[in-house]
Amino acid sequence: MLIRELLPLFDDLTTIVEVSATGEALREQLRAPEAAAYRPYAPGEKMDAETVVVAFVGPKQGTHVDAETVAPALRELPVGGRALILLGWPLLDLPYHQVLEELVTAGFQVLQVIPIDNATGHGAHCGVVAARVDRLAPLRTHLSDGPVVVEGDAPDLRALLRMTGEYVFSDLISRPLRLQLAEASDRVKEQDKRIRQLEKELATTVTKADARVERARNDVANLRASTTFRVGNTVVQGARKPAKAIVSVPVGLVRIWRKRDVVEGRPGQNV
Image (tube, rainbow, N blue to C red; front, side, top):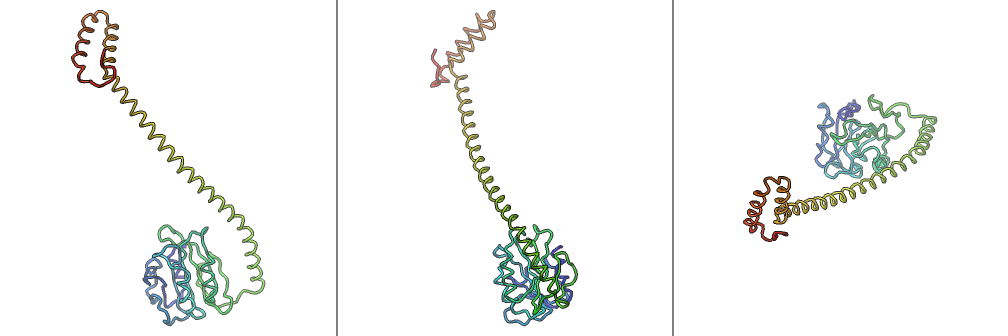
């Protein structure tokens, strides 16, 4: 579900109260209907059953608020009042107990938890739809897109027994999965640490290799510039072309002798 499709679930809302530092942070993202009044939360200001409290709870200071900050607004809503709480944690890291504790303490029933698309854009991974009740409200699935209704037949004992049983079984199944996820996360961290260590070692090795190559180049340059190398090269060239050697070798040696001062201080300059 898209984030802008959440408020239309509350088809009878008349007032939207936002709990945030500015009181306007969510208005554009939620596409609040023009027919509904939109205002920031003010302690003690009256709210009726057609009011929906909205908040963005998460770990980022400045962008999110914590569950305790939302709690006073929840407690001031009358029975029938509802709340839409966006959560800024990825589902696998969701500390839902923090939000659930405040909701239950304020007398709220969680009616639906809705996964939200395009979380990378706005940072909201899911939305919690809850209502303040004095008895259990009709149940909803996370894919329900009909209006949020508090009135109606409450779940009977059979439905409650099934919910309790499903919770126990799902917790049994999810516990080893959470353990596997934690172990996989630890392995990934160790691998990342090892990769960073190898990158440092590789960088050090490359630096040392570059230094050796540079030294080798300097040695070759020094060798080629030395008098010994040039004399030897002149003799070798003369041996390859004996017919010209009688002239080229003496001439070459004289040139080397005349230029010997240019390479003064290099090894092998004296012959």
